[in-house]
Length: 88
Image (tube, rainbow, N blue to C red; front, side, top):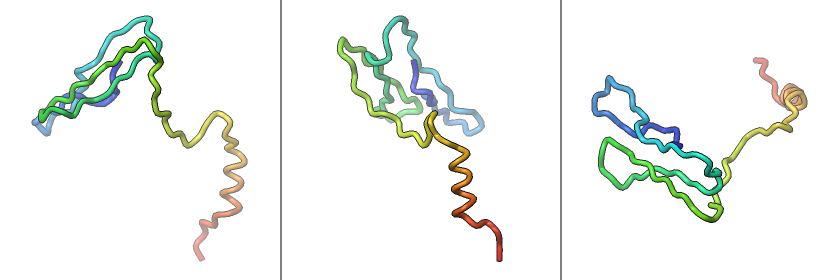
């Protein structure tokens, strides 16, 4: 488990930030765990916090622009009809 974001911010600009903090878990359903960044330290390191709960943790759902029901053909036709990209 990790946030998927770098946790180590090296002061050397020639080096790439790295993900050095993560948790290894097994057989714990995602709805009982929450992972978040801790910005409390003034450091080149952003630790992460893992919360495990006996109860389901309510999480904000991610905003998505599309879903599996998106009709791309209809969307494409609608754009063609409504947007004129030709220069006059």
